[in-house]
Image 1 (cartoon, rainbow over the protein chains, first blue to last red):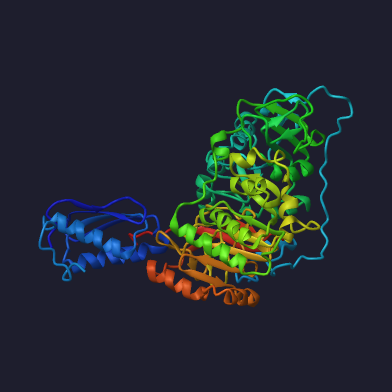
Image 2: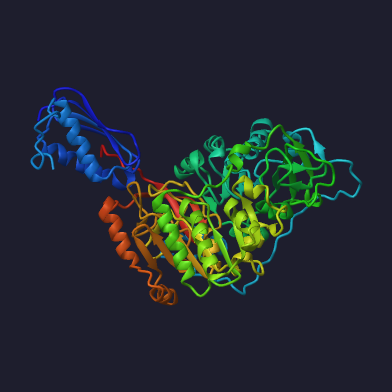
Length: 100
Length: 520
């Protein structure tokens, strides 16, 4: 998917994450902050990158401010931010397809 | 050298005869040589010991660089005294190389972090360390490793001369002009002054800091004028709103209540739950709520609690007033109900930290304790508990009386949710061992109960009562299945804090954390 405009998903509540995607400059640029960085930073990074790959996003600036979100939450926030950035979050979301 | 809880203690820390932790009751029967302070004689009758300012009091007591100043933490997060004294010593008198020996330190003491970064404060000895101070110490900015002790370990170290206090500062809600202090009757009341008592007896000099001067004699005194050199009156020793909450409220959170009910069930299933039993509980949500459920079982069986100790709060005072507990012996007060009750309600007494929990005296109250209910930041599959470091390796807690009551009691119950946010509370290895697993008997979580295999007698009790329980390993796996298995923390070699077991041996060390950088 191509990131057309900046979009956000999520919150800064405990156990959530705020994900922002913006059009990239050729490649994935990930900026990650987390309240559980030392124990889960590597896993959060991997989860975010995997989710972007699954959505075929190869060119984006992604900012994640994580407040201890579980993997499922992180995936959902990344997916939602990406779909919003392409204007495709209103209808025809591929549940069970690219979004799972 | 590896100690009895499997922690590797650097040899350098063992110079001077320090030993590594060998297991519970290792020091039993050994002798301790008590230290004695060198104190000034006041033979000539004095009208008053009042001095004009903290600076004058410091000068009067011969304050100089390199000294150790002690403080007590009954004013909790409302305390102004530590910051006030250190400011006078460092900014007015230009002292440096100072060591703070406090019964605990908290968020109220954030300004001290700057003195650590400037190298003016070079040593910290405390039970609790949090906020900015926890961060700068974790970042390795304190010149010497912080020494963390339990509430019982502290008076042991003071009495044994391991900590020599040059000047003790007593934050006194009321004092008379010669230094008889009480924790009540003023405008910043804290109730019990139990943690200050050993300081006053073993410091070379003692300065009382009060914001409410009362007529002589201020009786019954918690700290006595016979130990006091000078009295300073300041505008305010603390913010009363942060000293004691209006009332420790019983949790309404259904998860807390479920765990509390299970704690009470476990207690009621043991043979120690009989008329005259003794009890201590923390003030955390589920620990405090356990009081409520326990009362139901006491009524059902027609039994009463003999005595309760600890940090005291309203619900325990209520039980005392209802005649359901015989005596309450109090080292610290957590809310106004407790503050207003000490030495007022019949049966509500004050005690010193040594009397409460010191393992090197001839028998502290904790040794007679039947049950203690405690919280944990982390507990591992060896039942070792961490209440000092966050799961990210940063200092942000306090052993307090946790290791003392766990070791002394017949049944130590840890109650904690299985996960907090993304943190697995039940884990493979705690970051820091603050209470060794050989002192912890039962774990109650929202996903099940586990009994330490060292206590087959308790396993039998639970089985007889039909209380289901599982292995602690299965609880750990459950936690990891929910939040994911955390990566091991990465450390540098530098030791930033030494954690003493209550008996003075070394239980664990905290090293400087190597933060994970996602750009790597």
